[in-house]
Length: 125
Image (tube, rainbow, N blue to C red; front, side, top):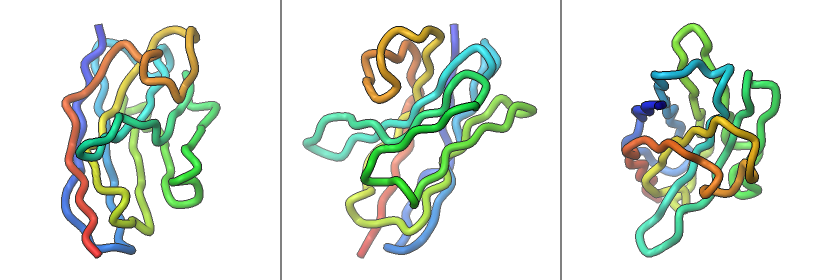
């Protein structure tokens, strides 16, 4: 089993920054791949960013590429999502998710087995 706890959400003005954290327990980051997804009101949950087993590869949605950075802190078994140049359209509940196996694609939420409870990010114009 993997438990995930997100933190770091909040309210910020457009152009500002936030850093989300996803603390994992039950397994080390070397044995899981982690993704961040977000869900705005009335919309489907969408892929934001992912980091592979051991942190060797990162991937981003086109909408956040160049603004968001996903990274991992192995000492704390935590994955971070640094969000810069935030826009009102980034407003959503952000979820981290983990998967143990390579089945499925990193951008497909169905490939992930474990989910955190979510953290709200609100960007005002």
